[in-house]
Image 1 (cartoon, rainbow, N blue to C red):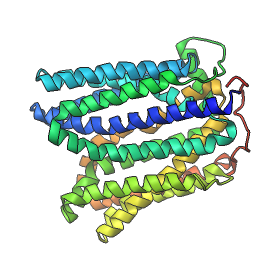
Image 2: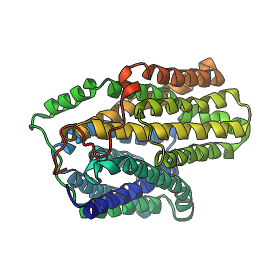
Image 3: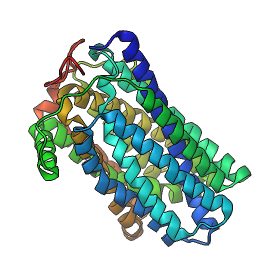
Image 4: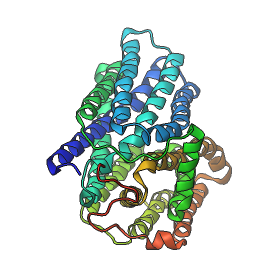
Length: 411
């Protein structure tokens, strides 16, 4: 085990890198969307650019999980950050110089999706290598709290940057955040993580999938996340903005998203002190609060109640997410951790594009309020079903000083 001061320094560098990247990642989508529209693109072209990013990210994430369990994770993190800095720099220069096109933005969106995926699993899996086991719960909470705060600032900053300086300079800020993150990751010094016997890509992916299936609590809650994103993704991206702005004005949806992010931050603060023994049971119960937002939009009792529903949604989701990340960090062997995080990411988000595509037509056919009620019921019902397996209800927080199975002293 490394000394406490070295471990603390490594964690601070990881925290800084992930926080500044979250800031830039909140700025970039807003700037990119406005850039596509300024180039004459319509909703179809914008959807193509966003879909290219999402598709390539999904295809790359599983490979990134395998590589993150084989190579030094900080190497992947700083390499992907430097390359993302260059890629976003190219996008920024093309917009500033006036030679950007929608196809170019789509191609670069795919490149950036691959680079984001390349370092993603490693940046989550490296966390236990930067703190002592007894400090891991607070570390998970602190990282998520910092990232959520940075995203709130990034969303607010994006409009100002684009409005005063243009989309190109806003993308340049995102490129600069990747450079700062790369410097942080370059300065990180962590011990080596445990690795299993090297095998083929498919063999390593199979080992990661078997590790997921070996833990009932793990695959059950990944399946629940799949259902959540399939239904709620379309609500937040399609139906919610239409319903709220129609009934309460254009500013109301911005207020709802602000209340949602406030819930995230308050939830993060709560997890710094709230440490339930049965962490997944408690987290999943709080996850049931996510049904409050679509339910409030369906019933439309007034804007304050909708804002409260959004706040409770963010609060419950964040408390669950912290306990979920901690359970994975404590229960999964280090040599499979990046792959498990990759499967978690894929399982959680792979159905979101489908939800975004079908929500509009389905909501029009059934009625928007009816679909919001269906979504709230599915979210609450899937959460209740996720509590049925005994392992979800009984999995306990590891005691202080606990190391995940298969951990070595070097990690």
